[in-house]
Length: 165
Ligand code: ADP
Image (cartoon, rainbow, N blue to C red; front, side, top):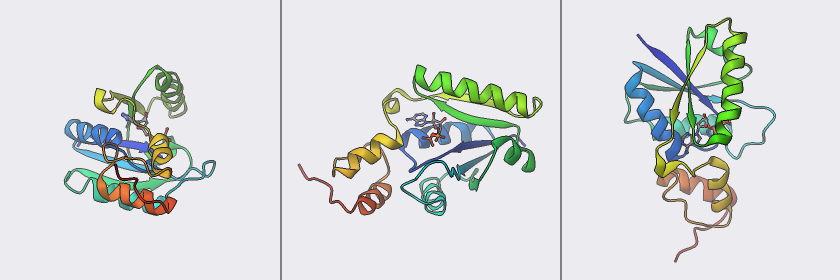
């Protein structure tokens, strides 16, 4: 059974992430999407909320499981017998950062954890969780960025109404 982990903050999940999840789920037998509990960042959604959002957003893909972890990815991967991490690449700026992390993970894990990159679908290349949150905080339209139930939850967090045109 080929299993892989797709780690990330997913605060919250966007159509860009969901595109990577769907494509990776067609490559691997099981894809574990795992929310990183990053103490260094102040997230909009708690880890539990992000896990629940991801579960709902991926409920139609049977071989996707949702989990969370703290600390180093290589430790989480070793504990769960996972040897491939999936990451998405949008632009050159992602590449430099991702390359460094991928090489570090491979080195630190003694070659046991490799990273596989999927390039973003062009229609989602501009999408990031932070830009979605910024647009939503002003009541802007995020219907093309995240599923409707996620959009509602974001507006609720900011206590704003979607601006109607
Ligand atoms: P991070 O894990 O760096 O905190 P995210 O949770 O936003 O950030 O992203 C998780 C992974 O998904 C990263 O590999 C990121 O490059 C990728 N990703 C984010 N947005 C998109 C997108 N629109 N298209 C493809 N990949 C994306």
